[in-house]
Length: 300
Image (cartoon, rainbow, N blue to C red):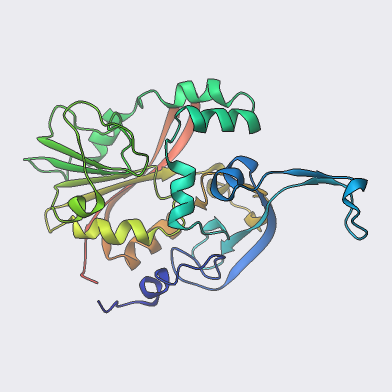
């Protein structure tokens, strides 16, 4: 397949350490030192923090806690903020297999005391499905067939009463709920759907094009793609040198600005139909969510 733009071609280079923006392709990046949080470093690489003391016998390194280092990158063109480490497929499977199940929760509680209690709230169904349905009401058509890409168990998929089918593709391996059907990537991309949900996914993935390009294969001229990502506090505030404010990276390896999301979608061949900033609560905490509805614009 021949691709029409450099960003799409560059996506398949899959750099271990990013040297260009994963949304717009620019190599005009600002950077600042940061740390990879111990839980993620352990799950992805088996790297654990250590305490360096005199017994190490290191002459030129000071004693103290040693954590996994990384860099915060900021694209000067589209204002995307992201971690320089780009995980492989195998590392992503290590991080997200059994997502929020016991082994995951136990290890995270070890590194981040109090997480287990917080997780009890996070695993509850979201309370803003009505807001999603209202946002999409002008675009979705019946009969409503849905693919939820990264949809976990399907508990948070909207249009429960209206849809005629729900397929879920997710790497966590969890059992799906109700009348939903778990599908493989190959099954998902060999069908066409009226609505594709990509909710709270693109902030996690090292190469967003690796999600959006396959999603295109499950779409036709009648299809609508719904995307939502956290609209982080740091991205909503006007400030200089944002990269210097982001000192650690966890599960969310991408912080999207509105311009970086627009650039990503344009480069993947989508037209934005509507966008919104939804202010709501998740697990009792106020959050801002960037919502986007789009459709196919051109073929790659």
